[in-house]
Amino acid sequence: ACRSPLPQNGERGATSRAFSAAGPYAALGLRHNPFLADPRPGVDAPFWIDRPAPASPEPSERKVIQLLGEKGAGKTSLLLHWRNERRGPYRYVPPGRPMPTGLLRFAPLPAGPLVYWDEADRVPPPLLWLALWKAARNGATVVVGTHRDLTPEATRAGLPIVTHEFPPLTPSALRAWCEPRIAAAALLDSPSEDRLVVPDKVLQETCDAAGSSLREASVILHIWAARAARQSHLSRSTSS
Image 1: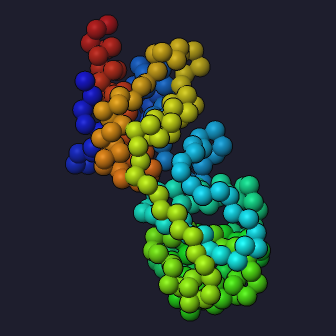
Image 2: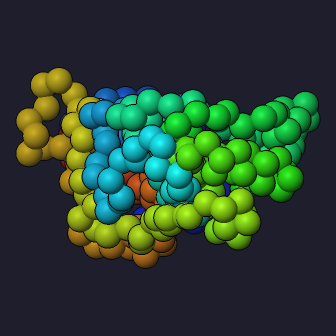
Image 3: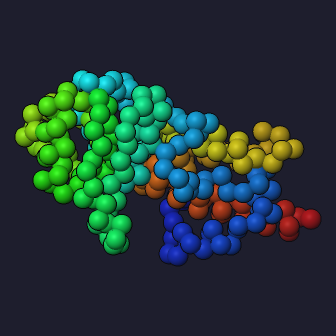
């Protein structure tokens, strides 16, 4: 039986270093650990899963749609998914540190009938209010990704606001997230029935630990898959 997926002391870094080669994962029908963090923002089409969310935004609706959630919940992924369907200017607002990148927080936010401002809560308050006031005057639709509720700022600027908060992960949603990643990491000659399957118990424990954060879930499952590969590899080595 597989151990709890929750990481123990030092495991987050150690598992990636210890099992970077394909050998241990071949015992699971895989070329590598399927639960790798994507260094790029957003989600490629083959790995996109539909979760409860509002309809795609339309331009010139004179409102703010805020995607509100914790780190890794999927705010940027949904924002960029919408932008692929409805094009518009996009701005990622960096954190205040390190410098000089942090100075980009002071750059004017893009304007247009439909705009996307990611991490908008990092914008200095006077600049955020000015950008929202201009959007209200021009009747724009503003989509923001934020960790903090921006209702007071939108209201002061005269814009109605619609909020989408990301719900906690469910085992079924997490399984839908896992399956295309396992398929993409599979060895070409491995039968699907021989590939890694994440047990229901592991999915539930991961959801309980990760809350609404797919990023945290991916870290937990990465560690669990490394353990499963090690156990399977050692089992085959001792039996041969």
